[in-house]
Image (cartoon, rainbow, N blue to C red; front, side, top):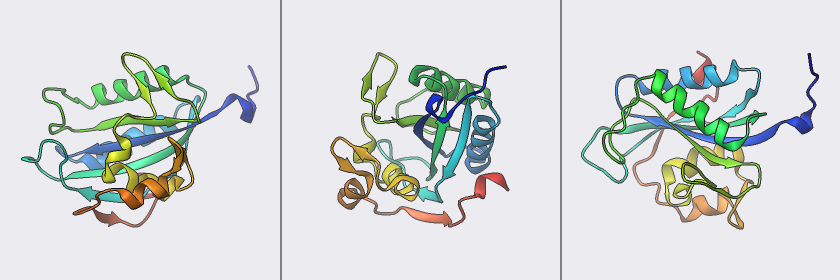
Length: 174
């Protein structure tokens, strides 16, 4: 048995959302799954938001949240975990920005910038999306992305139509 130290852990942020079935339960289940692993810990979760669809607007509103985690997984392994959870929850990728039961995006991973075919960190479109920045600001206002804090990016973001559904940050544990 190895003893891990805090140096073994990296801090990452995840964006979660969905608009098919019971997306709030799906996000809670995803967070519980991540938190239940030995190589991941959920350390903070944002409030829960209802957001108008983005990109493809002829669909139901989304529910969104962000989570701050500590992980011993490398970035691409964390992405694989998120994709595995989506698959287990029957996520279907039929159309870009289309309806979904669950979506889990790796937004940031420490202070690194990373680009591969399957993953880009920071998430390439997070800074243009109020539905990401608003919940991310709940848990990481001072996180710096591309030279500015999340709070500063949020001041410039379009947050029209985004509503807080649950002010509690433990909504996922109920």
